[in-house]
Length: 356
Image (cartoon, rainbow, N blue to C red):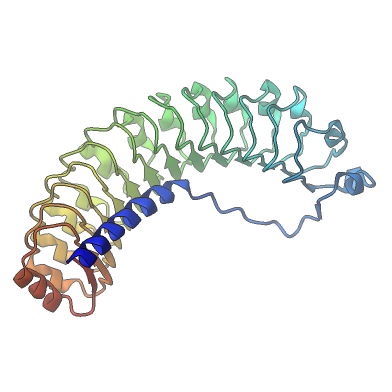
């Protein structure tokens, strides 16, 4: 018995760790093999006008070498994993720059000239010490992907809503308590990460972002998710974990493309009947809640591969779970299942890996 208890506790800890680590995953950085990569400044300076990709990552830089500005055709610059505390005021002279990696430094701010880079498409500036962004940030009209997570940004400039081709905006793990009111202007936005902040209310302008595929608002202070969430018809991933929701939108089943639904530790008492309408759902995670009954309609989610109901108040599952032919993993640890109910669940799901 002691051994089984230890195993259960270990599984609970692992689940918690994995849920937190999921928020910390770095974005996938694709290598452009069409550009010749220079890893040494001295070598690059031998043919400065030929240099399009300069990689000075892990060079122990405390300031940006002035020679950088001799590379008039520079398109990609990697300054990650250094000790930079600021960028020079004339950084905007790198007019051809398209991609900037400057994560894992000590930047507290960006110069105003940063927004004078007309071709800048991708910025990876996470894990720094940024407190704010330039007021005219919206001047970066070519910006498509912006990763600024794990900083200390408390306010976003209104001008971020003027980025016409922005597709990915990731500011998770900052100090935000609000977002600009004109988010609805970001018509190209597909992925929005606002998780691990201090946002108290669901930003209403998000409902105008009808091209959103990923929305992460986990680890905030939300108490209500409006029924209007169903307007976001293209959503494939929705994470609302670690908020205090108690009640979930009744019409959630209308999100027909939703594949991944995260509801860790939300104080949920029940799930809506309409959940059975989530035809594309593959992963349902709702551990650490107060669920006592799972709706019969869960058996209608034919694509389900993984369910996590760890540490709820369940004593039974509906027999309709037998319809979940694709279910590979079911986590129902720390509930109130009798031995008879456990055996019944095993018989209903003979091919599923079940963790009690």
